[in-house]
Length: 216
Ligand SMILES: C[S@@+](CC[C@H](N)C(=O)[O-])C[C@H]1O[C@@H](n2cnc3c(N)ncnc32)[C@H](O)[C@@H]1O
Image (cartoon, rainbow, N blue to C red):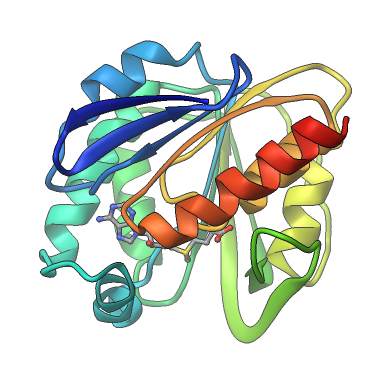
């Protein structure tokens, strides 16, 4: 693995040509150097940190909290720079309108879908287990082309389905956490790139992806 230190608060972990992850804080750091390194992205997925949980995510990351607005405006900048043909964004009641407003102000996507889900994410970097939560969320899908949208219960089932496509894709998650997207991208032969500000959560992603590369 090649590790590039951008500054004290930002590192790029280039695991292979197919997987690269950036440790850094959206809303504070500038991700230009990371975004320049990765190829054009075909699909963006993100289970966004909700405003009511934002304090908790910062506590877990052992960082001084910025405002949720500052985070969201940094995130919108990244979404625009990536300029992908397809976005799948998990939201809750408290941040759905913010995401709807961003996409309607930004550009027209001819295809829009929404489905109910329950949040889930990997338990750790060693097993296939998922932490399943009864917190209802919704997935909003903006796309330039028609998308087959599954009716499933949990985030991991949703991501598993959208990663089952045969055509090889470059996929991106700006809040990749423990790496739900990266896991299913790897199983299905896609390339995956992502960002997170929590070092331990990002290490879970790296550990799982590296172990599977070694065993394949
Ligand atoms: C709902 S979780 C995402 C779960 C993810 N799908 C997974 O597989 O673990 C939200 C993530 O956002 C990250 N996060 C919150 N604020 C952030 C910020 N300002 N910059 C980067 N990451 C942030 C948290 O550390 C957390 O991992």
